[in-house]
Length: 495
Length: 111
Ligand code: SF4
Ligand code: SF4
Image (cartoon, rainbow over all chains, first blue to last red; front, side, top):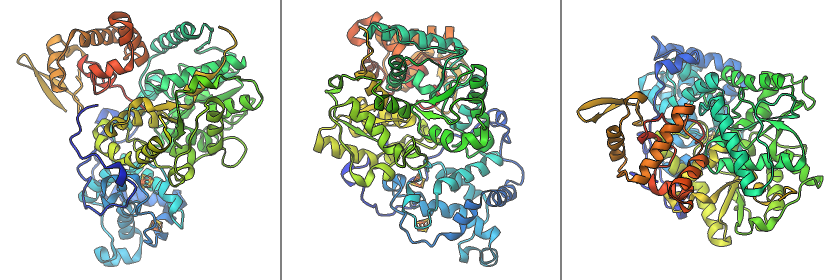
């Protein structure tokens, strides 16, 4: 961990509403996307002439296209119940990070241009033009929202700041002001097939390495097949699973589950990414184009179904948008994407997997609900499956499992602090501060219940917590994927 | 965007301090980049840098961390073949900080 040059929040105070400090996180800025990166995605390379007017026109277009956006702009009664529900406000004290404060940055432009009162009374009616100052605020604070939707749970009208943030980013991209992190990554997916830019030979060598490594460790011939035509299952996972730790340990877990169940699967070099940053730039065309690679791979490899790995926002994209954007999936036997947790859970229910739970006895495990799984999707057939399925797997593979406090659990979970396209180094201060809320809950169960492992099913959460927990003197090894714990305990039937 | 000075020659780096042109790398450049990170390069550091560069030469991408740790274990002894040891060498992370010093592009994505 590099030495911090900012104050680390006190975890004992992290869930208390802080006194407002205006502009406290105004200095936290994103790297703008350079012209060639913007052009690759079909965005204007740099700020266009007359961007003020064009931004307003785009807002006008979006409010008609997405009726919810118009509604969100108009129905807020400033009740304040969302104000202290955002981890970035709790961590930074900046009022523009109160969900309602963030929304107001768009609403003031909306009022000025699309309401009679705003047009007539201007600032008196809290209405303002889109100008340089406003754009500066937008490009700061709409990149201090992780689109986690926690605030919407507490709003009496269900106003979803995530949707407002997405729209703001879409507007900024359309006038030539993009964020390097997401824009560069999407470009790599279009060029190479994944966020990291891993070319096929590297992917092949990585999977070969894992095959050997697992053979050495277990004696079993667990396969990691690539581009295998006619496999039953196309497995799509975030590319971080092919690169990072602890991500790779879950990748090994997925492969072991397939091995133990005797079901054939394949990865694809064309679609070597599950993450879909189209969501983070708020652009459905990009989202569609990214997922299209998966549809193409499924057709080319003639699989019967698609199963997906541990990734939060991508599960939302798959669950909520694939059918509309990329469907119908008639050519598959199973027409809906299946989450790997559902898959493993079904096998456990059927008694198709056996575990040696003592293999995880050194761990006292808790579970971190990732926002996009918890609040934006479901899993399995029963309501609440997105909460219960992962927990049932954990209880099946670990002897010691402990819940987080209710106030920050399940639907009320806090974001890891790095979601929504903010997992980038220039925002490290924001990420550390934004992680304080959830980390304080972790610390509570560590102290009170001896927890030493926090399991999760999101590549971003894993990367973010591994990076920021050491700032709070919690070891990065605390972070684990669910299938990492599955991997430890699963019996492979040979030795 | 900025630049670093390597033996009197100015070399371009990106916003995060990674070399813009991989061809600009040299051992001297590595020393300058490491200094910027506050890391004195020992032999063990060089093992990591050299492996990263060799792997990148062949595959046009940095290796998976697990591959790197295994390789370091082979070279420096099994007890050093783990992420923990790599973080001791490169507190900013073996992927990002070591890649920077090795002159590789910054790994992008959920990492
Ligand atoms: S969506 Fe999440 S990050 Fe954004 S304002 Fe709401 S609580 Fe904060
Ligand atoms: S809770 Fe909803 S209505 Fe109340 S201030 Fe927040 S966004 Fe507005």
